[in-house]
Length: 118
Image (cartoon, rainbow, N blue to C red):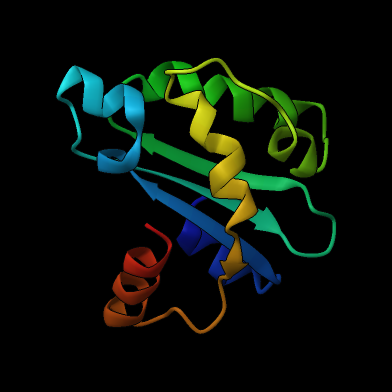
């Protein structure tokens, strides 16, 4: 699901975000444009959707997809150890910094949270 779809669904959700400029592998490659974002159902703890825009995002998203297909709680990925340096190694960090999605309707609110969580 996208963030807009989650909002329309009315379900309580959590969101985590990491800027690619904070990802070691992206920095190493000189490709720091973009971000990673994940949406989690607050009650079931299942991952609802994710966006990976940037270096190696096309490969890292498969870590999230596998958990989604297995209907595993996000904590399975949060506790995982990924190889360094990879883009995927920041998935557990992102999942450890989840914040409630509600109340982030205004662009300025989203920007403030994104800045606060990196």
